Amino acid sequence: MGFNKKQWSWIFYDWANSGYGIIVTTAVLPVYFKSVAQNAGVSQANATAFWGYANSFGTLIVSVLAPVLGALADYPHHKKKLLSYFSFLGIIMTFGLALVPPSQWHLLLGVFILSIIGYSAGNLFYDSFLTDVSDNRQMDSLSSNGYAFGYLGGVLAFILFLVLQLTSGFGMLFSYGVARWSFLLAAVWWLIFFIPMLKNVRQVYSLPENPHPITSSFKRVWMTITHLKKYKAAAWFLVAYFFYIDGVDTIFTMATSIGMDMGISTTILMLVLLVVQLVAFPFSILYGWIANRFSARKGILLAIVLYFGICLYALKLHSAVDFWILAVLVGTSQGGIQALSRSYFGKLIPKDSGSEFFGFYNILGKFSAVMGPVLVGIVTQVTGKSTIGAASLSILFMIGLAIFLMLPRLTTSK
Image (tube, helix red, strand yellow):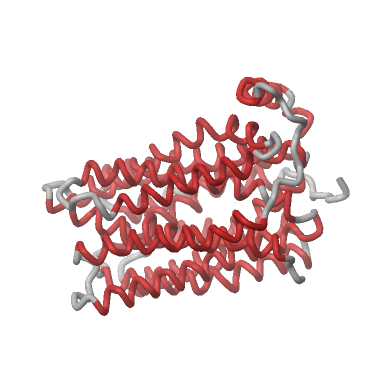
């Protein structure tokens, strides 16, 4: 299915912040942080835990703000402004990561928290723009392609990082200079590919103008909470989503730290992450095809079951080969489950209040991202094995699956 200019511009925002996603949250900063923290006397297990806690704290702040920010974005012209404000916060703080001295690991975590606030809040408004750029018929395909091209953009940004690393003469991530230059690369990548979204995408659906939008937004959030019984399918979906997306996000943010705890070299970890991105590109599009051929519901169920198996497989991780297998399995479903969850929810909600509802969608996703890394961190510290921490996430997928199975088959005639 062909996409128009505004739809491609929307897709390219995922491409834009993909450099941050792979370089900052997944590949480089976790390794860089653990290196500087351990050089400062922090144990390996505590460094892994602190990284998880930082992710949790940043997403917790966005979680608290998400419903009100979403409600505010539903007023005319507010959605684009809020997307811009938080995106530029993320870009500036990503640039700031390069300026923090390697000895200041506490400050490094603080700047990272601010960057993840910008990244996470920006994605809230980006997600809600899905209803402005597509109808229900296109939504699954467009959402899947957004994730797919996001992964492809991440691959290209990551390749540029690898070129930077190889041409630096060091060839290893532990070169602090190379790591800090990679943060500049992520910031510039985000800025450049954000431009099409700024130029071509406009808010289509909105509520009537209000002279007191902030006060009104708080009131609307409370009204929506008290009247969720009008949107039972959306409400129960959010409960299921809360549990299963927890595992998805946690595996994404903690994978590098877990690999390091297994003794896998940073070079191998970088190659694994590159392959995961490459695998995720076609499989995200495949999930869009599954949704169009069968249904988004069946596609989500398939992904949850696969992730449940992935968590159990984590108990068998003993070598780099095992980690490779696990990573490829994650790549087959990571983009698909996120893409179809976004489009599935987009079909359940009223379009003129889309940002408000996506605020609840994001708050549950972010609160789950608070719980997941903390769970892995605690289990890792108690057992001394991060693989057991990863395996514990299977419980969350099981709960999410049980609730999602109770949802009725989705009709899109609204």
